[in-house]
Image (cartoon, rainbow, N blue to C red):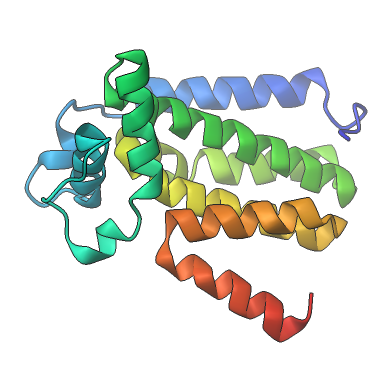
Length: 192
């Protein structure tokens, strides 16, 4: 539950203006994923998986093939609704950001963080070039953003002890990255 005393108009205005600033000042390029030396070459494989769904792409290497579920699902949605796959990559990127912001509001509420520190936390996330700008510029890298979201949900479990958050974080971690298996290892080793 969000404590509405912590969520005031200035806080919401800060978040909205910050996001608008990021969206207006980002350098967008339609084919940025495919440029030689791009920071997000993995996106090419994820797009290939999505574009070939419901079949399987043969143009992917083994470590990207292990992360096929999310792009494959995006490809299925694209075919089902007859909408470009990039739209769904962008949709899930923005959905992940909304969920991360909501979870951060929960953290601030549960940990009783004051408004100034709350704005600082959101500022660090919004203005971090390796989180907001990167994923907005390369929406095909949404697989990695799902993994980040799974980490947030795991932290939410550690604070609230609600098992649903534990299972959701493990599920998202495992379908987004093969290293998500280590969430399970860590949980078993610490007897959570």
